[in-house]
Amino acid sequence: MNNYEILARRKGKVIYKDGDTVLKVFDSDFSKADILNEALNQARIEETGLNVPKLLEVSKIDGKWSIRLAYIPGKTLQQLMDEDPDRIGEYLALFVSIQKEIFSKEAPLLNKIKDKFNRKISASRYDATTRYELHTRLDSMKDHKKICHGDFNPSNIIITDDGGYCILDWSHVTQGNAAADAARTYMLFCLKGQDAIAEQYLNLFCKETDTAKQYVQRWMPIVACTRSVKANPEEEAFLDRWVNVVEYE
Image (cartoon, rainbow, N blue to C red; front, top):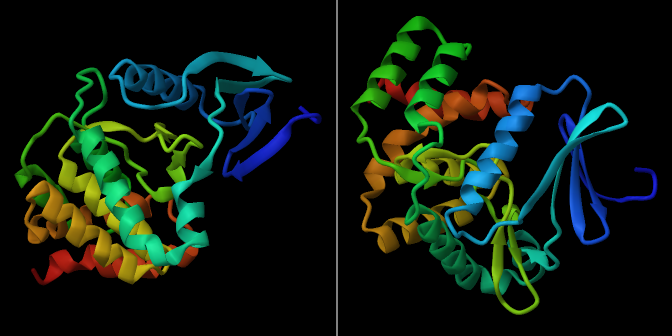
């Protein structure tokens, strides 16, 4: 692996470019079940016809589990937004249209978002009263079967040289309510300090999907709680403010 180009370092993994493939190599103590589930998710999403990198193999390299995918040349949508902020509106319109394309698909064998969120709420550090309120709120939300990416942000969209796009990183994908995924995307913008872009995104999403903004906002304490389970210390105060909305709503 010393001869491979490092594309990114993430917690628990390193992502390399190896010719016309991408190799995601996990730390030796990374959960085998999570790695295999990520590969399975990738394969299931590939079968929906969405524009995603092709899964090529799951193997072990130097004793570490790895996932190999096709390499997609181009720039991330985040790079394009950073390079040309005057076109933010245009790029966000594309971003939302891609998200709508994802929501138009179904993959019945994916884990359900409500099941995942209930587990996360139970595992969170919040007190029993707050957890009860969050579980109750979650149970009251409508059950849908739409594909929810789980980490939908502009860094996970590759814009190819021919103007096409490819959607990366399906490790958090579930099936469920699209508003939950929109709430998570909004939160990701806010965690990066991009509050204005977050509002622009949410307004556009609600307009294009005919979704009440208040309905997406009802998901925000829930998604904040699920994020808190593995949050960085610097995120905790921000997430606490969102989660504690349930105390006075």
